[in-house]
Length: 203
Image 1 (tube, one colour):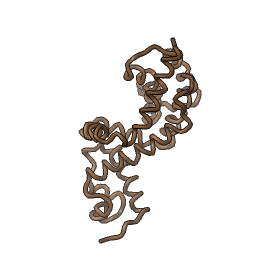
Image 2 (tube, one colour):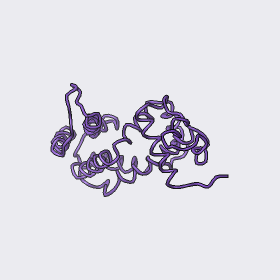
Image 3 (cartoon, one colour):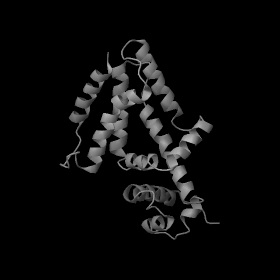
Image 4 (cartoon, one colour):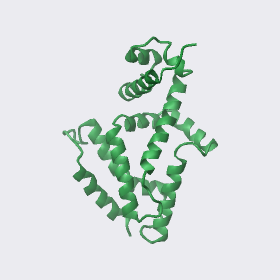
């Protein structure tokens, strides 16, 4: 059996994400991955059983890393504006430093893997996103109890609180706005949008 090479394994993971973002999940194959890594077709199988195993492990690993970074410095007991500012800062920095990972997760969310992961999370509550979700739900509950915001369904809250940021990041990653004109996100745009979001959420 061939020995595992950590550097080679990291290259395989990086190239897998690149291919999935560029060609979609349907266009992702082990042979294409091996060619991109300049290794034999058998090399990825040293680290993963098959394509599904690779994708599942990638999502879990990157999901855990994303959860840790997004939760950094976030206090569920903080005020609405203070807590949201930490969340926006963490999400913004994560997306800028890891430009392929948001489109990678979008590919996953729009595929058959999405239902598979939802089932895995329900069966294993300790998997990634549990701490993130608990912190966010506690934060929302605290802001409601303090009378800062109205009690609204989580999906509505999330759409107001974070969708504007992710839309800006999507335009930035694509390099163009919804009108097709060139677009580059700036800190000023981010925090101008942030203040409008806070106003929309507050009573």
